[in-house]
Image 1 (tube, rainbow, N blue to C red):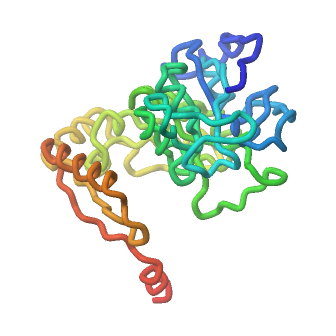
Image 2: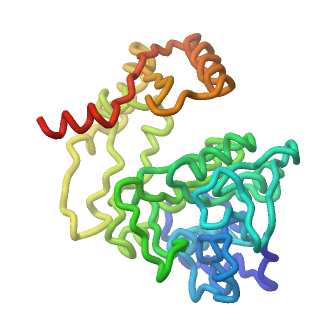
Image 3: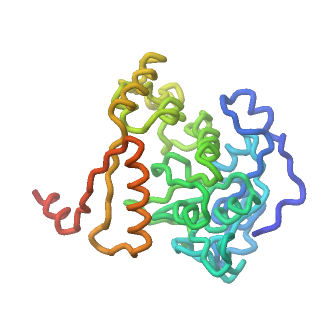
Length: 317
């Protein structure tokens, strides 16, 4: 981990807080990996070639979290070039699992997950393409998720390629939160999504606020029951759209809960992707999770993976 800056100003953005409808505690510490720009520090992406090139400014997500009251105080380790299920490089060395040093902490946001698991920071912000937030969170026993791409702005997130060019079009990276609990990561997500500046500064970000009714109620049935949408057309004059579920108020919220209780959750289970057979430990974990959820009014549906040949045939038809 890189040493923190010598001087921190937790209240430097306090004047912005009065305009925000968020509940992020003022002065809460925030960790972010060495591929997310923090003013004055290198975004190495685990490469020696990127050392001694400090960022001129914060990534947009970091800037918004500062405005919400967070204090970025430490940078955390990533694997060389990212995109690895471990965290090791020739700049900062190897990061081990906080529960067992003989095991890996995962990657690429392994330093984030390990630090949060050790209670070295209550919140972290990682990045994820194919599991770089989710797998370290799983390995280290914390919570993390990958939002839909573009849900969190990637402005200021370094790309481990020449001239910051990214060729990832079909499976893009997304910035995602890491915390000890689901409520912790929801708090961080809300702190970003509730700020109009998020949309105004990055036109690729959809004007979607944090959907409190959907978060508090069950997923899926809540939308079908007519819960109020989080779509907010007032966030930007460039998208004068109106979502059909944006009305309903308290009565719609009440219907959400009643409908969910009646119908229960319906979860698809994918045992294999058709390419790689999961190891016995992963298969067992999936079966145990399904058995536990089945006790709380959950219905499971087996999902078959679509192979490349099947997908190609469908496209040709």
